[in-house]
Length: 198
Image (cartoon, rainbow, N blue to C red):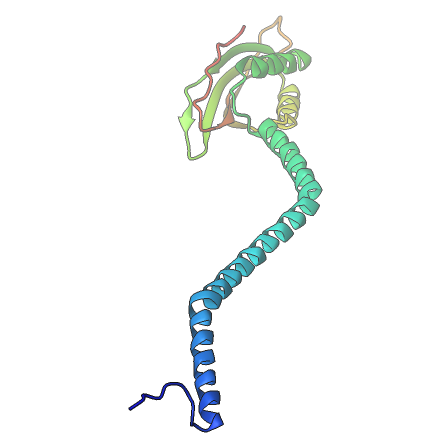
């Protein structure tokens, strides 16, 4: 007895079904093990490309804004310089002494005492009081305070005490003592101590 193999003696559609099944199995295998990983890799690369393109766009936008940012930085530096003149980071004892002496000489005063006091720490600044005593006239004292108010640096006049002063050979009619309080901005580094230059 002979064993039949193949599709001999079967209707034609059996061959078609067998071919379709074999083709489907081949397609499923190729899709699962070859095409699907490639498709996922391609999708990942597309996402990466989109991310890079977005970063490139951000970089181009930032490059267009760069001149504006530079101008803003320049203006902020000018503003900081102006603020440092109002609230400096150093005491500048010799500068203040020179200016006070100049003002007292212009106002026909006799400067009796100029004594810098100890610093008092606050949150972001340090108070620095200076005790001053002088002799002059009431009018000239008012001019002195008006000129001090025009300093770029903040200087407050406190504890003003005035008394009549009269000596036969003196042009001065007033003795005054007060505390001129100025301020020093505290940076992250410690303040540089300066020696009083006289």
